[in-house]
Length: 148
Image (cartoon, rainbow, N blue to C red; front, side):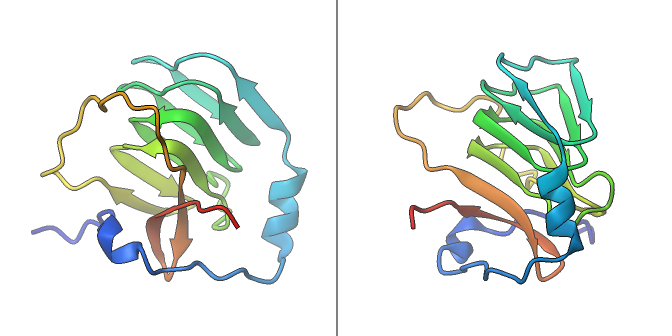
């Protein structure tokens, strides 16, 4: 076994509610970032780097790498490497309609999908529950975004 961090089991996280925190300098920095909108499917071999927030309207197939100084939001399936908060902002988040990333990074914290989960392609469905990855207690967790 390696000491490499892994995704927490989503079943264990169903009762975790990430508490709202007081606004900090990092929050104001995130809000001030420009946002880049990409309206296409991101394919293998593509790299997207942006010194702000990235919103992708489409799926991210296996193979590309997405890096943002702010948040990353994918209105589709995220299937590869995503690095939010690349400038060191630990309050950055990664959101997707379906999170299937091989590796997630937020600032200098990272997590890998367990090796025993090999899901190169997600079965098509009409129902998605959006998910969000954030740092909680020095680990990256993925939780479902529920309506308030």
